[in-house]
Length: 319
Image (cartoon, rainbow, N blue to C red; front, side, top):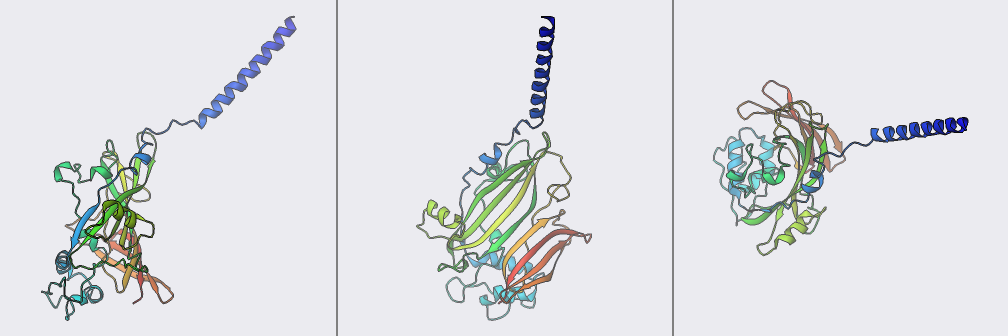
């Protein structure tokens, strides 16, 4: 009897040890889900308003006049020569304003879409750092860093409805959406990585909002003149260090505006801050020639101290 009780007690101890080992082993992999995991679903579901504008040559003309001393002659010759019989260079300080009715009509140069499509959000509704609240994950992620992005120009130019946008006063739209969100980092040190896509193209006066979203928002949308992706990292207050390989407290995106051919695509990463009051230098070198239709360039921006602040790759069509 005593021996039977001893055996049963021994067996119960072994079962208890096995159960304890199973529980402790499974708990190693049972991490509670982040309290911010819902952002990966909630942010992409937001319906951002369509930004409309009437594209006249005036904003582009004023920007070019401002930058003419810094742009190479090849840029003016390729993108702006149609606006006048004279080449627009620093030697012609007062280039004429292009016409919206008489040919040739000027097309929107690469990256010039950034001076159009102002957001409808009044200043009082913006967050303290100027962030659109519809693109922000909210508290406690009150700081943001523009980590990089990419631009593609005239991706639908092969279609019957060209992706090129002419500056003749017509209505155009910029469709914005949050395409992906991920939360990374240990509890209390999370960072929210937000990918924002912007698609620009012409639209008709009577074209409804849903029709515009469907046409321009399609993967190979008809009439899309530019597709821009912005990679934004939202962080907690006073957080510094490396984020996805990018160092520093902040880095604002800078787009490359110059080129000797038709710029097709730019992909870039921000490595260090750039400030409006400091001198910067935009540099580039050819790294690959892909047949007769495309050339590839490494492009970078050097800050005031000569360090690399932005680095990217540009694909240029041979014209």
